[in-house]
Image (cartoon, rainbow, N blue to C red; front, side):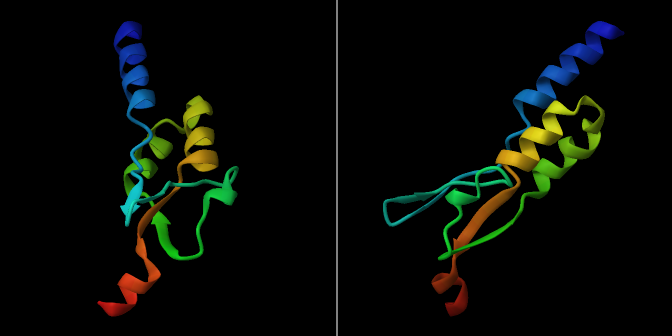
Length: 87
């Protein structure tokens, strides 16, 4: 049973970073968290990545996974503000 829990924990850690970069016009807009706010671009709309909230809640007792997600991978770019205004 301990071996199964360990394997599941390793899988969750490996799959925890579900945020994707946004590629527009040859430029890359990466996801950001509380520790790397300098990556945030004011021309981009960001939202909390819902797929990262699931392991954040499920693995909250491990401390490492929630810290990583909140500090480095919480907000995901979804589009440019100019493109969203046209829709």
